[in-house]
Length: 183
Image 1 (spheres, rainbow, N blue to C red):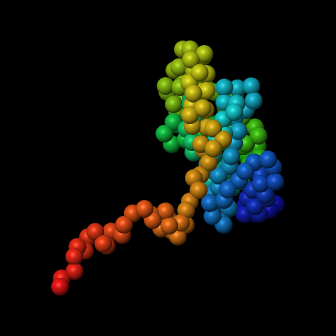
Image 2 (tube, helix red, strand yellow):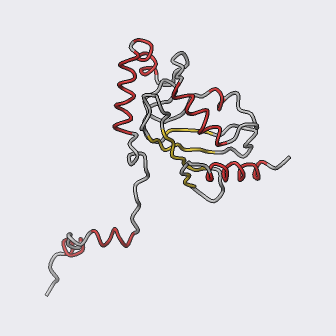
């Protein structure tokens, strides 16, 4: 049996070699982001989400923490925090599962088969149970607004040199504050 750290490395490499874009947060391999596409033949099709994944020290014996970074309208996802209420991940996790399972099976199943009887987003659950067509329209609106391929992406960060060069239009604050020199 391999150690949890070896298993973490192996699962992460397997995920990186798959078709998913993975962005590491640090070198410890415990926190990273994955680009996830909405499943075909669903109101989420065409949406692209940035998923935050945190692996606990006891991974794979303890489940990963999964959250949507950009907004999604779903009964089992908290709209504000992006936390996922997913029984397979949170309660029935087994070391037999790996990170690829999360993105190829668990999350697509969550989006394809929402459970409005166990909601984190009560409004989405109520709308889904009351008017499925209106619910699916709202899902599509959220996809259009928050889950376009470039919406969930992390904005490019500028280096401090670039930020300084962008300020050429403005006079130095020192010139304005100091006033005239004494004769």
